[in-house]
Image 1 (cartoon, protein in one colour):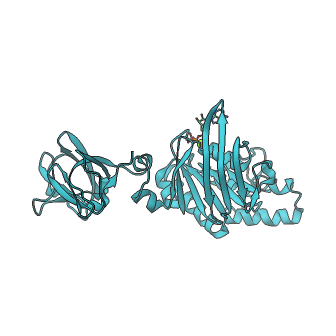
Image 2 (tube, protein in one colour):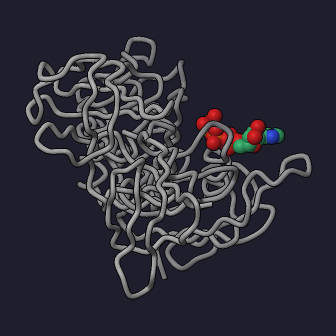
Image 3 (cartoon, rainbow, N blue to C red):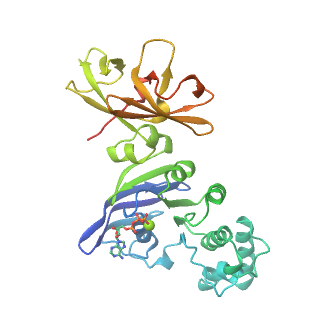
Length: 352
Ligand SMILES: Nc1ncnc2c1ncn2[C@@H]1O[C@H](COP(=O)(O)OP(=O)(O)OP(=O)(O)O)[C@@H](O)[C@H]1O
Ligand SMILES: [Mg+2]
């Protein structure tokens, strides 16, 4: 059995199910993120795990013990919120010490553990400051220290970096993962930022309308999306259609994108058209021979390390992101006709 298990967990608000029979297993020490659009039920799920909301059905099991009927302070969970939720009238030391005082830990031990926790988040020497005397990043680190000092079984973070600017966000996410790995604590990290989720997680649970659509490693989520929602939500995709020329079980499957013929390793049903997604970075330009999809270069945009090309084929736009070290963008001009090519393995089937 996994360390943290959600079994058919349900939450209903005003007769609407906002979390629908959710199942999830998380291993000890794993960092799993909940990724999904606003309103899909991320915070609600986290609050049920923490005990701030009751479940309306199902079970939550931690380390072999059901916890869903226990009050929050008996669940041994540490929580970090988007808005830090520090006590403004208490010093940094007292904020971090709070949970230990509630648990009647001795003064000497409180002192030692608070100083250790502050050292871990690189805030030694800030004990006497008040929250308003700290930057946003520092306040979030106090809040992380406060969550970790009680040595929780599970760490729950609800969009902890949303209030920070882009650069600090990146630094803080590295720091959080560093601490998480060092402590080895089982963690759920809620975010609606896909890059953040892909960058930090052991596994990502992509949520949509109260359900987990797919839970997998970041690479599997990106390269092998299992549902239509995951294909479109993670990264960007072009939507393209091919005519299936040949599709017999004992022969390779041949398709044609407006004359650009490709052989697929898997079979798609023979019909008039078959639909695929194709990521912009999987497209290349062919100037060597006559293989490829004929497209008009509508626009090219220099983006530093890469160039984004907007191609047009039969009134359909196609976006391509091509590294400038692989292809020098000066070789082609807007208004020119070129051939776009890709590997058939990079075509993601559209799941209906
Ligand atoms: N206390 C409540 N009463 C009624 N409806 C609620 C309550 N809390 C949340 N909801 C609804 O439940 C759904 C899920 O909300 P939740 O806060 O879990 O979303 P979220 O995924 O965390 O979104 P966000 O990314 O915006 O934080 C939403 O439709 C929301 O309006
Ligand atoms: Mg939320």
